[in-house]
Length: 412
Image (cartoon, rainbow, N blue to C red):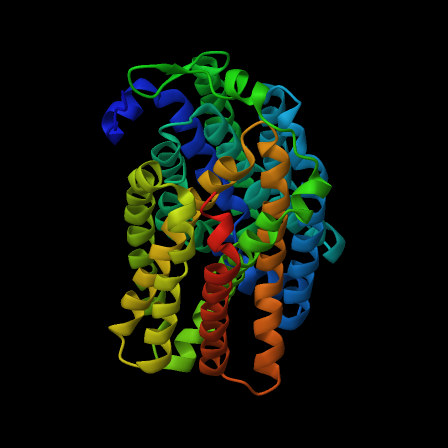
């Protein structure tokens, strides 16, 4: 008998593992572009750097973190979760300390690399892999809950970080972030892991012990097999586009505001629409995944973002700003739980760490290239409108590719 659990019941039965997922995605904010971009004016002034040089430094650090993640991320399949999580939390703590202590460009590069690797990469990777592995029938809902850390962070941290920088200074804000990791993330995560490690989760009328049972009969995927599989070529373009666009839009939000004639304050305030829609659509994606499967929803995840870019391209009135962010947030909210469930549905959970490390590499590379590509075309005389209409065309081409190439694969 199949029981469609509502969120409240699912959370009540499995609150510790789900909160583990939420907490890790929330604290990944310290390595996400929407937070790190807030430090840019003060970093440029302190180190006397140009915007283009810093963009290149940021891109190289992000690409290096992506390459590292391929080799390190797969160990979550083999190393005990507690030990792996300790490693990741220690890394993000040290990353914030290195950023706070940076006195030259070399230390700044190391700080950005560590923040991107442990924050954007490993914290979210640990959260999604763990939740995907522990749940099967309610995987979509579980991932939707775990990914709530992203919109919560997007709604809270920009205001907190900017206020802290203005009051304390940017280096002191990084030090305060390290203190928050030490005093909140570390003890809370230890407490939560004691509540679900080696224990089954409850998905309805039956118990599911996740990877400890079902994965024994699953195929083990080597990383070279993952990148050669037809599924990789089907999924990777969408994963790339999401990371590319979100990073570029956040990175250049103040410049887009100036181009459109909007105030920076209005642009920043309108991002609340992104956080709200991302939150709601992340929650809404869970039941859809559990009912229809991630494979059936996946082809449609980029359409709201494309529509948001159409709004951005056609309208200059300030009311277009929250509408644009609202539509972009829809795609962001859908994408995270859908693609994480997609990997488990397609490859199984036995090698999920290896699978996710490959696709997280693709995502992180895209986040490195987004600001660089935008900068290149802007310096060549193209406008934001030119770039965004080109991106819309690429999204439509990708949808056509999924329709033609993926028809048979997604039906399996």
